[in-house]
Image (cartoon, rainbow, N blue to C red; front, side, top):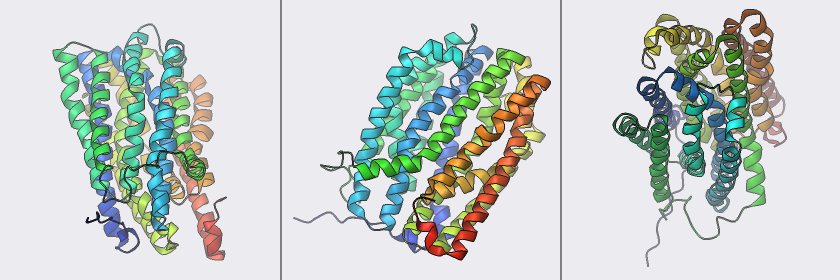
Length: 459
C-alpha cells in the first residue's frame, strides 16, 4: 500500500524573510481584519437594530470577551509558538502532540469558565459596570455566548495552530467563514426573526461552530505533519508547562485588558453615565480594527521568528522583527490620521443617536491620538513571545495597561472626569513604547556580547 507523503515545512528557514512575511502576514491580516469587522458587525447591527443602550450593554460584555480570549490564548498561542519551534528543531512527533494537547486543555478551561460565569452572571455583570438600563441586554447576550464558549476556545486554539504549522491561508479562510456567516445571520436574527441582542450572540456561536468543523476537517488530513491520530490527546507535562509559560504573556495581556475595561466602565458610569460606556464601546471597537491588523503582522512574524530561533538563525529573526515593526508603524499611523480627521463619520456607522455620536467621536479622537506608539509595545512584545522569552513578553503585555493606563485613570479621572479617562490612553501608549524599546535594546546588547545567552529559557 502506498503511504501518504508527509509535508514538512522547511521554507521558514530558507525563503527570503520579506517574502515569507508577506506570505504569512497577508492571510493573517485579512483574517484579523475580518475578525475585527466581525466584532463591528455585531455592534453596528445591535446599535441600529436594538438601540443606544444595547450598545452600552454590549460594551459591558467586553471584560467577559477579554477573559474568554485570555484563557483561549493561554493554550492556543502558547501551543502554536511551541509548535513552530519544534518544527524548526525538526522534532515532528512532539510537534504533532501539540494538536491533541491544545484541544484537551481548551475544552477543560472553556467548560470551567462557562459554568462558573453562568452561575454568577448577574453579580459579575454589575461588577463590570452594568446598570439597570444595560443589565438586561448584557445578560441576554452573554448567556448564549457562554453556552458556546467551549466551541470558541477550541476554534481559536486550533486556528492559531493551523497558522503555525504552515497553513496561513487556511487559517485566513477559517476566519473569513465566520465573518461571512455572522454578517448573514446577524440581520436575519435581529431584524427578520426579531430576536434582539440574543440574535447577535446566536449568530456568533453558529458561525464559530461552522468554522471549527472546517478546521477539524483540515487537521484530519494524513499527509500533514500535524494531524489527528491515536495517542496525541494524552496531556504531555512538558508541552503543557511550556505552552502555559509562553501563552502566559498574551493571557495576562487579555486578562489585564479585562480589568482595564472594568475600571473604565465603572469610571465612565460614575462621571458620564451609561452612554459614556457606549461611547467607549464604539471607540474601542473602531480602534480595535487597527490593532487586529497589527496582530496580523505579528502572527505572520511568529512562525518565522519561532522557526528560525529554533534553528538559531538570528539574522533572519532580527530581520523579520524589523520588517514587522515598519508595517505596524504605518498601519497605526493611518489609524491615528483617521481618528483626527473624521471620527464623527466613523461613529455614524454604529449609531444615529446624537448624544452617543458626540461622545463617541471625542473618545475615538483621544484613543487614536498617539496610536503609532502602540507599534513598539505590540511588535516587540510579540517578538519576545515568538522566541520563547516569557518574562519580557509578560512585562510588555502588562506595562501599557496595568502599570501605566490604570494609574493614570485613577489620578486623572477624579479631577477631569470623562476627559481624564480619554487622555490617559495616549499618555500610557507613549510610556509603554519607551519601555519596549529599552527591553529590546537590552536583548540586542546581550546577544552581541554572548550570542548563546539568548537561547536560555529563563530570559
